[in-house]
Length: 385
Image (cartoon, rainbow, N blue to C red; front, side):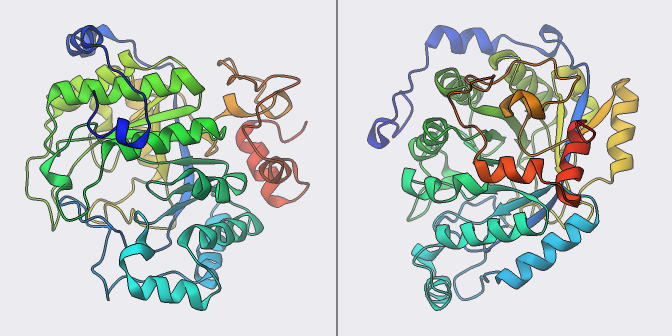
């Protein structure tokens, strides 16, 4: 049983035999992808405050030092991103920052908000106005909090990280695996196309890694909502001096991810944090969101690769590289999918769809007769339809 899962009402049971089977997987047991994808984004760190104090994380600032972007600042970042040809606004902030930081709480109140989540909604609306599709990664969310912003997001995400209780999450307010799983489940219940992933090297063991991947698979099989799973190594930084996973570890765990997950779920590795070239044959098919405009604010010591570097990774692997939107095509209605789409449509995403994977707001943005709409459809290959 996953620690704390029942406390949060999450019924996820991992079969020991399935764990043992996954632990036997090696890189040679999986097939490489036939192509690679990436998204062009801007990183919008809405605030650097977080209720947690994970010992590997450089994202959060202490109370009194954390700031909150104004809507004017959000708009300026998004304008620069749209001008650079981006399609995604990646919104991040720590879990419930206004719960721990009086300054953030007071600033939100001054701007007419009783929580960071209602403010996130306004920020997402600004991104849409400026021609970017929001993808919010706001940490753990209750059902009400996610519902507040789901319709102004093309997709959303949260890293599961691990189902294990690890010392790296220690502190007066621990990050609980059960709470993360509840957020992933909530996304499925609300028909939100979702990104999640595991963090490798924070004190978990191999069995924990297998259990984490199988927990993601179980929730996806229940709701058909996970679009990609990130396999991310922890890297040395100002707050973390522990070991960084070596290449052999990353190759094995990446292959395990590909073996554990259904074919329609992409396996992503961040090319600024690991040697993607050495992982392509382990089942990687996505290189994540990269920005020509902003830094990786979660990993500021590790710069985004330039597009030419992504092209070089694909060339070395002998694979085509194509741009994608922050929401995968399988979640779009048939009239918006690329003519070359040969994947598995998400449950209920066909004609006469009974699940609304993209909201009317996002559908309107994708089909708009303006510069942004044409940019989105150009990425999809449907611009002339």
